[in-house]
Image (cartoon, rainbow, N blue to C red; front, side, top):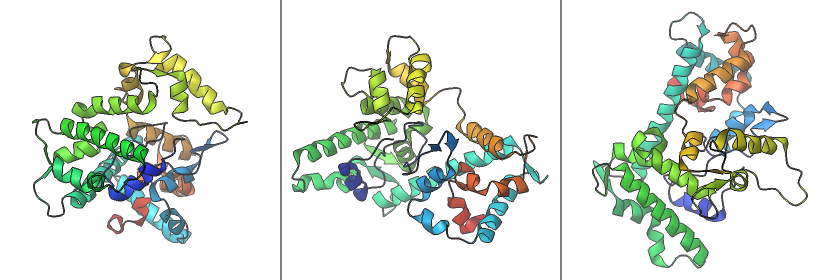
Length: 317
């Protein structure tokens, strides 16, 4: 699992809108990783997703009375069950997961827009954003040249993403453009930026391609004496069989794009299938409320409850 360096943690204090490190398993869609392993002994660990979304608040949520927590989950079940037949189909679950994802993005954009544009003007300029996020660079506040170099590199990367977000070629973004800036994976005209940033993150030697060593190094940093886990061996095989499609020993930009933004991958459908597989005790491809409540921990850690947040939202009930 990749670990945020000290300077990235410090920079986060200046702005929530800065690009975050992503989990190697899904570089585009995953949020901040939990300190829990996503899989323990090759079994899904729901607490990973729970803590990944809630952070320290997860401890507070875990102390809610079970009766109240399950009551709230039951209310969410009723919302997902659009046709009111007392079961949830894969399509209903998929639609709900898409809704929670869109809501997350909308709320994230609204929060960042307010932070950087407190007067709620119709547009936000690059100069204003730069001053708000990177203005400290102009005041000799950094004593470490390496830190300053890292900040300026991030500013350059933000600048490139900002320019791509506005298709009119100006330095001024509308709120819609700003959403493209924050979530480039959501729109076609920004996907090349996502691929380029991923290449820059992983391609440590700067040769324009990703070797298997760089690919593994992005997700696993062994310490002296460590025995390579089985999942790392599996990832090596994934690289050789599926990632490196032309068999030349490297991933180029097109192969990276297929990896992180595959045309035929439906994130919501994959999550819905996973939840049904885990919770459908009678194997009828439908979930009853009883089955959902029985697998309470699974759903608290899933996108169906917005990784647990929906259970604490007043507007859900």
